[in-house]
Amino acid sequence: MRTIARHASLTAACLLALTSLTACANDAANTASAGSGGQGDGKGTKVKIMVGGLDKVIYLPAMLTQRLGYFDAEGLDVELLSEPAGVQAETALVSGQVQGAVGFYDHTLDLQVKGKSVESVVQFSHAPGEVEVVSTKKAGTVTSPKDFKGTKLGVTGLGSSTDFLTKYLAVKNGVSTNEFTSVAVGAGPTFVSALQQGSIDAGMTTDPTVATVLSKKAGKVIVDMRTPEGSQEALGGPYPSSSLYMQTDWVNQHKDTVQKLADAFVKTLKWMSTHSASEIADKMPADYAQGDGALYAASIKNTLPMFTDDGVMPQDGPETVERVLKAFNPTIKNATVDLDKTYTTEFVKKAAENSAG
Figure (cartoon, rainbow, N blue to C red):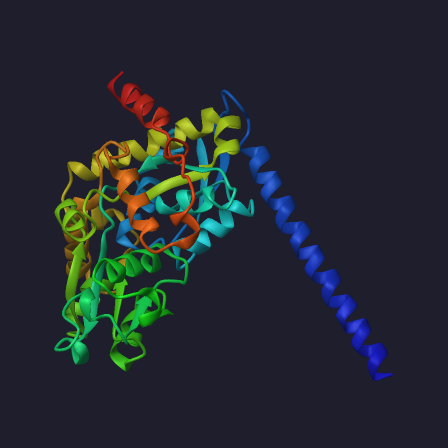
């Protein structure tokens, strides 16, 4: 009887899982269909975009574009979804749950060597916006990536861009990837808690988490990549990070919709370049400040230098990313990457023309 009951339970579970998967697939297909009004879609074109952390300052253009009303102005009905790490946004994209992802450009290279064709269509940044912070307890012994050996290093998620960059900094400074432990701790309160409790010795994160760590005196900055200069020093060149990337086939089949997205995002980047951090903070959801508006505005100010004002891929940026990934990633190290297929400037250049006209 117990065996029969167990089989019945398993069968029911399988049917439930299958139903759920079918529902997800149908939902994605329906969304794509709604967003495929083709050339000349009208108002309300539906697009789902997964963001690797909506409240992270590095991905701020996503929510800001919505708050400024630029999606609506383009006749788009954009639903912004959030995952704690960029690698999860990537997964949502390639599985067809969403039509776009806001995350790091480096995922396009990683996916290409895995047989997936994905491209950045709007490049938000020319620096990572990432910061390596060491816990106050370990600040005396871990002063640079040269000291990573034997440490527990926090990243948002395994396989995430913070994981990629952490490994590169280690290898560049003579520490192999098997001489330290990467620990997935997310961002925000979970990162801060891990640092305070000793679950990690150091870790890579972004604002506003960086600002919170410093305000609580929980850690100290040892590598700052929030500016082009910081990127140059740590990585040897511009490092295009935050971007809107999409599956190439979907881009080619929905060019009108992609153009509208590019027009909206480029307007936002231009707006950001002419407004103060406080003015930007005022446009964001109140809860993003976590009760400290001044600290939130300061975190935006510290990160603003990473953003482009036109959405264009920075010169030599893709080459820097490829070099960084090849330094530690065995999958990419011996693979040939066609960088021209990892991004397009077609839509942002047209967006510039549209705004000028």
